Image 1: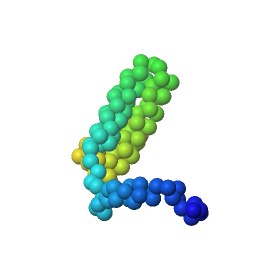
Image 2 (image 1 turned 180 degrees about the vertical axis):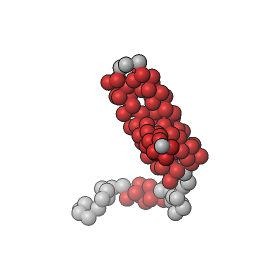
Image 3 (image 1 turned 135 degrees about the horizontal axis):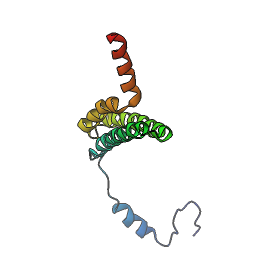
Amino acid sequence: MTTEGFAVPPERPTEVLELQHQVEVLPDEPTERVKTPLLGILALGLVVLAGIVEVLAVNTATDGRYLVGTVLGWGAVFGSVLGLLVGVVATVLDLGRRWAITAMVLSLVANPIVVLTVLNFVKQIGG
């Protein structure tokens, strides 16, 4: 007997038939993924950390260490923008939407560039 065209040796064709009957058929319905709020919480954590770094930057700069204050200030900008982006992703994917919306709102407050722009605008209006 030749073995051409066979995927298994012809000595064991009954084993192949038995294995074919043991295959479990999976349902066509997709399984639901578990929605965890960790991404929204991460966004809020990044924004809170950016706010803390902003306070440290202001305190350091007022003590006369301008270079360190500037570096910390840019870190606060980067952290608040990153928190905003992670918050947007978490909101779109519904992974901690409430946490993410809170993070996005606070990221505007924690961003030194936004704060400076608002203060300059208020100064121009006032006089």
